[in-house]
Amino acid sequence: MRLILLGAPGAGKGTVAKQLTALDGSVQISTGDILRGAVQAGTELGRKAQEYMKRGDLVPDELILGIMEKRLQEPDCAKGFLLDGFPRTIPQAEALKGLLAKLGIRLDAAVNLDVPRDVILDRLTTRRTCSNPKCQEIYNVKSKPPKKDGVCDKCGSPVVQREDETEEAINKRLDTYNEKTAPLTGFYEREGLLLNVSSTSSDEVVAAIRKHIGI
Ligand code: AP5
Image 1: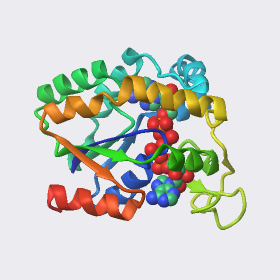
Image 2 (image 1 turned 90 degrees about the vertical axis):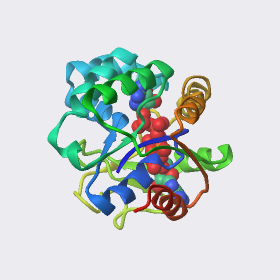
Image 3 (image 1 turned 60 degrees about the horizontal axis):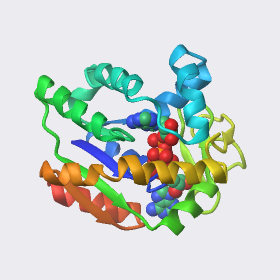
Image 4 (image 1 turned 90 degrees about the horizontal axis):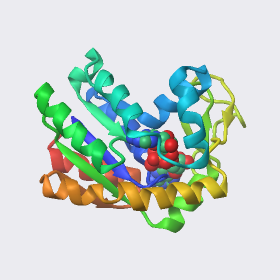
């Protein structure tokens, strides 16, 4: 499948993407995970991105577009991909449209995960993430705690709270989302690709997507 996952921070894009990749071998491409990996590895990209991310601001479009142009042409994308966290702005959406046309790739849908703000705030303050850049498994102290406190079930690395998960940064990320990313639903509606799913259950979201694309 070839999907874009849209939705506010904490809407469940990463959680749903992991469930969907298990269905047909599509790869999850999370720009947030790529950037956090670069910050931890101390690469030039990471150094450039870190201050924006810590504040809850978007990283400049040109940095993200450079990454995605290369990433979408890697061999593991041949079976399909789930874009989690990209595009985030209208210029990114326009650039993606041009890139996909150039590569001869058609999207199945752009799925908007619509979740109430109070649920989102609760989820983000209780989320924990594996600190291993190659794993980045998502946990939640309420709904999905690791079996051993503070230790990743999958790779044994420490499970931590993200640097941008302070109340101030969360509020900033939600404002940035409303200003810059929410308009993408209109963009994809006009492209005839939008699927809006209002649910707080990831199983229901996955079922709605499967029904829509027929798998
Ligand atoms: P990114 O990592 O993409 O963060 P985000 O969009 O803020 O998304 P999240 O990862 O916070 O949320 P999610 O929707 O994936 O929710 P999750 O499944 O984890 O980006 C981080 C930063 O990188 C940005 O702020 C920006 O600076 C930069 N960046 C990234 N991409 C960029 C781009 N394209 N352009 C510019 N800058 C960019 O779920 C959240 C929690 O809820 C978890 O605890 C989970 O367990 C729980 N949960 C999920 N679903 C359920 C459910 N159904 N029931 C109960 N709990 C649930």
